[in-house]
Length: 439
Image 1 (cartoon, rainbow, N blue to C red):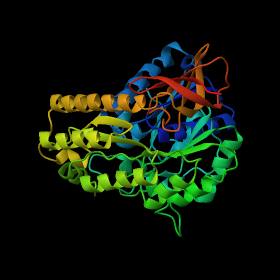
Image 2: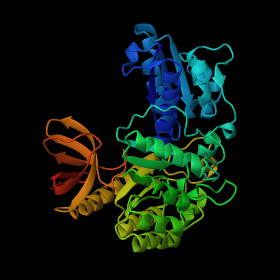
Image 3: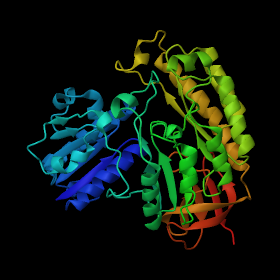
């Protein structure tokens, strides 16, 4: 049976998709790249914000057409979209044969085989999610790099976020299990491991005994293969001095700190349910730069949150200019009636939120361009990830994370995908670097 799986949303979703594909291959199914050749099509969805939910629905409807024109006889939708919209989704998307919520990924083989044991919409409690162990089959899709999910769920209660409802409470994997998977991935040829979860720097807080991210990073740094390690999705409240020091102490750990702050106005942060303020953020980034002078800082923020005033936005803009983040993403607040923030007063008009988004992105574009120009004539190790055309390679430095940051374009004759080469930067763009091999 041919299957085609489309993975939407974040890196954590991608890991779920890779595990499902691996299980299906073990069960005898054949993944195919073209949906027109698939007997069964699976869409692993995201619904974190309205734009993501709309993308999921558009993708489902486009692929549903292949039930008439292609080989497809069965369409399965998994993940956050059915988990968020529950049984109502059955009537809204009658083209779909079965929906599996975030707690039902383990039933993907039954869904593909049209098991009579499944109902049209399977929504077991997300707190029953079993965090996959190191022995689970997985179909890697990201070349020489791989995401390593270290926990599932989140214990926080940010007023704008639906994740705890969709994924349940935090459930950390054991360090031994994570280390075993990391070693297996390294042995398979993976050159970069990126640790992900909903609240990565809170890793281990739900485990018995002593376990935290600094200890996990220390353990992973001892993997014998020469690979890069980085983590994404940190939190200002859970990142510790021990984590920062561990990054400083181990060259295999990329000096890369992805810490979404969401805002820099104390009043907005309070309404968001974030328990820190501007002063705490300033001290945090000062500590990081003092301990890891070469640190790369990345963050994401939300503009247009209910009650955000011009003065609040000006505080955020000035904070971004003061810190000069290497990478910064800006989201416009996405409202929904199942969010606590939906009930907050003083919604921000969409046009105002869009203007604030554009102003902040314009400021960051200038900062990023200036930061990149500082790399001219410097030499960096670069992980080669693709070769879009003859004599041109695409890769990333240690301060460029997969998918979310810029890339390094290399003009060279011949390299292998997965090589780590020394590159001298000869030109820069707003977000990307350009270079040549350095002997």
